[in-house]
Amino acid sequence: MPRMVITHDVVDIERWLKGKDERSAALGAVGSDVTDHVAMDGSNTIAVSADIHDLEALQALLDSPPPEVAALMEAHGVVPPLTVYIEK
Image 1: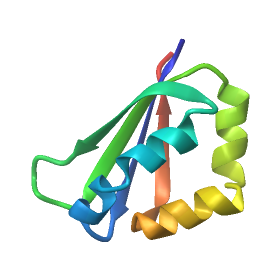
Image 2: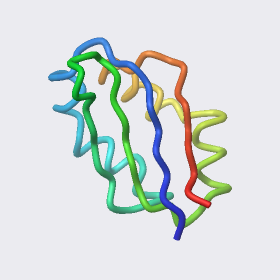
Image 3: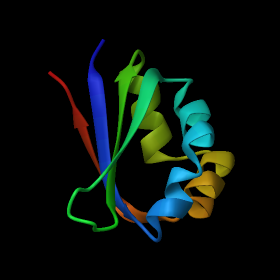
């Protein structure tokens, strides 16, 4: 199962961290073991990693987030663009 890492900025780290359970649930359809990471330099750059069991579904989710996922991203203060890395 490949591991995915997504990086992006957020408006506020504490606000973003409060959304962990919602983030895990949103990614649960395509992966598991969702882990949040914050930058050691104190910036608002974060990373989310997860084991992905359906790469096509992940791509579809990223290409066109459903309204409920887009609403979560906005509520959590996600600042595009998202950079996605997949373990090969």
